[in-house]
Length: 555
Image (cartoon, helix red, strand yellow):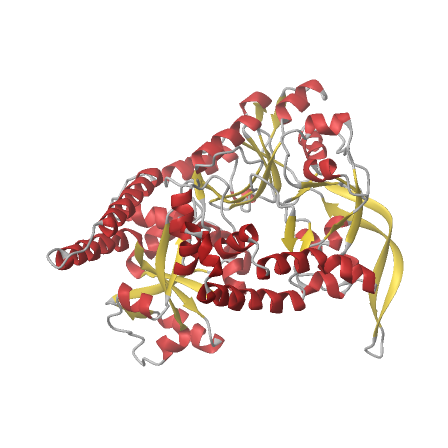
């Protein structure tokens, strides 16, 4: 089970601050924020880590996780005590005290997220700052994900200089020229929610460029009268074929998975650290380098050479956002250690890829479907709804419970069921015959039926990581030609190679155009199975086609 605490911060709209001419909201407690639904849960991150250190809390993330787990267990034990007239008040006080103890551990008072409801108000607030509970808050960061949600993070002003000095990792006040939007986005990586992992041994290598000659492109041409037309043209395409992608050794992947508390070895990791962002896939680059290329050393972008066996992670320069501002990786590591910064994983692959997933209308609206195609497409959803509505015990129970982890025991599943009627039918399935329970289930399934009518239907397929062929990345890193193994318009997938469909339709959300349906066939050879043997999840793309462009640049 992933070992991650969810912390809580207040989130308020700019309109709430602007209403106070003094920009002082006065006292606003954790309990008040919770009652007004102005609390948000955020996973642990570098900002929270450094805030804890500011207050001399040097407990490790694992120690904090274990402590919180014990507090929750103690609270749950109090809940199990049978209540009587004599102990009612005492139990209530114990429960409140234990919950307050948990809240003190998880509430991060020094951070407030601000929802921008008016950009002019935001500008004023960012310049003047604001107060809550006597604390002055100053703008700290706004990541790309926050920007999409119009959210900005503010921090207790007394921590601002300390955090800036630490999280800039030696570059504070040393950068002469950079686009502020880029610097803001790179700095905000420190606020990404992560599961903590050990520091790997790293080699930073150059991205490599692939030229695809004579590609047919639908090009939007602008005319002198202001009109636009779509014309097919032939042109060469230049691609950064390892943009945001790196490699991790099989042993380091095992270590990361163990650090994260996973009960399986993941094979894709979206990593975060100071100015580091991107996806690592498991590939035995050491074995490939020595056995296929006859090379046992690797040289980084700074000219420093390493024995290939001494490297855990190959980062591309597009993953190391501020690489050009450091003299070498060792200088970065020196500052990284000085400020006690950490590595974390923001996302990782599931243990098992789903056999069916919910579509949305975007995937459907730009396809040419016959009536029979539509009937075939919706049949799994129709069958699913019919079995629930007909009272099929298994389907009804699974629908009521929702998605659970296969490793969860009954007690955990039971505790996570929020509705009392779901807990009732888990304990006694004859409750499915109860009229009230049936009505609750019907009211719930009505929303699923409504969603199905607008395209939320079950289809054979699932969401997986999109990966670029790792072999040309290794070859490029060693100074060789970046020759790929997978031909154009084919992909390697351990999962789909076992299913053996004739074709795959690869899509990316949000989808807006029919060209984004990327129809490919599968690639499967003995050599591919050998070198991609750790990639039991994910779709490995060829470097010889325009798939990444068709997926909106795969950004």
